[in-house]
Image (cartoon, rainbow, N blue to C red; front, side):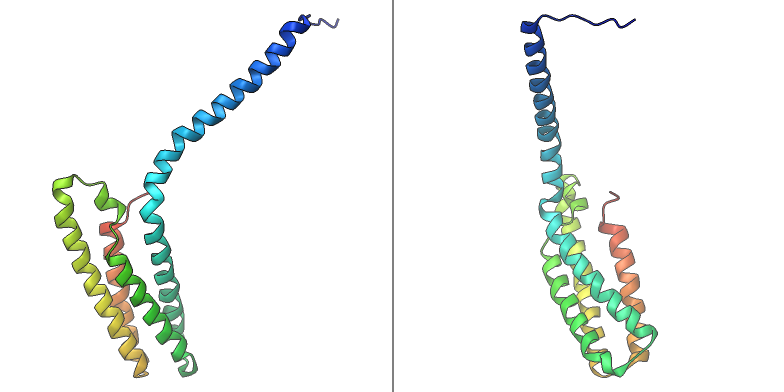
Length: 162
């Protein structure tokens, strides 16, 4: 028993057109609803995240290298420390999303604190570069532990949970 719904042709075309228009409207409304929040969240953070990724790459390079010190790789480690410092200087001028989400009356003080902590991190990166240039792997491990703590504390303080 096949029961077919009989729809006159004039309605069949309109139903198809109505479906296509509805689907298009739904897709556009979703795109417009989601786009502003994504754009606001990623505009400046994208730059900071890109720079932090570069710092993280250097951090990994030096960390792995210090596990099995090889003097022939010192130029690569020194270059990583230099790049990390350059990127950290640039990050210092950016404002973390977590600060942007704070009430306006708290932002100035938070930015001041963030920049001071970045100054300490930058000084530690300079120390790492100096120690690596001297070829002192033992001291480089000490400075690396310092970097690790500063990184952990900084992320806990300034990185958003999302």
